[in-house]
Image (cartoon, rainbow, N blue to C red):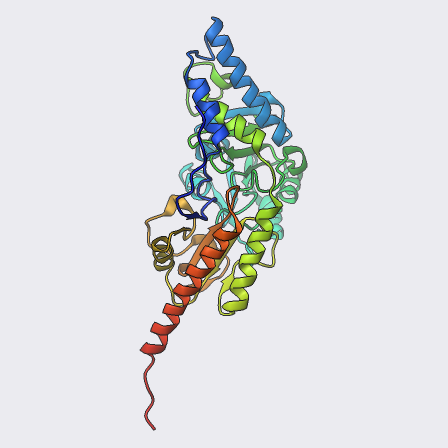
Length: 381
């Protein structure tokens, strides 16, 4: 079955999830059309195993790993959980801007958690990490995301890994948001554990992977011998095949960076009062987090949705909750933390999508300024 990509509106929320590539759907349907459990020894089972091994090879090769290091999970959240809880750390050191999948899980493990602050640009303070490591107990795990899901700011993970190993600690990075947008290679990063997910790169939701190098893990799911006894349960073969296909199609898109830069320049030229977060730091080429003082994030998201533009106010996992961005608060954004929106581009984004966003956003801004002007008291001389 062949499927054509569908675009019903302007979709600019790729950091929440990317549209599934048609070739990925075809690969998944092909797998679902035939029987076979990868753990079975008969012909259909062996053929299923071949499909799974092929996808594992594709994921491993793209990350600079060997296939045996790749553990398929239900997504990035489970991969992070397995990295944090499966290593049984005596202490956790995380950054102040980690995804809730890391931050909340760390708080539940019952071990000391040290939170390292970030600069106003959203970059972890390595000197504070070094000081924390110097006082940390044995069997410490450091977890620092490779790129922030809200601001797109890229973290110095390779340097953090060097510091962690210098003090005998292990290093994990949540690379879910970075994968497919910048080069992600476990050898260059020097980490021990690395999490990725398929649905950020045009693959299916509900499938991810943890790359574990020279680390013994206590499985979170027990039962069978799947994933080399590290994650029991019959593998989601169709999703795994889709993941492999998405990785095969994945390519860094310079057009996305040009479109993002054009969007930001137009915003700053026409609305100098707007603030773009992390602008002075290295960022993912597809992500813009901007704020307009006095206009709540939720109001902006709803207004843009009514205009046919899909954006978000931050992490999709927190959608529907009226609260300021924890990431922006850590960056010292103050009141702007509750006035920010995230625009994220991807493989289907075209110049006309950016034009649509700009028309809608500036229209919304104009209405906001008109209301603010009307609300000002009139002075009487």
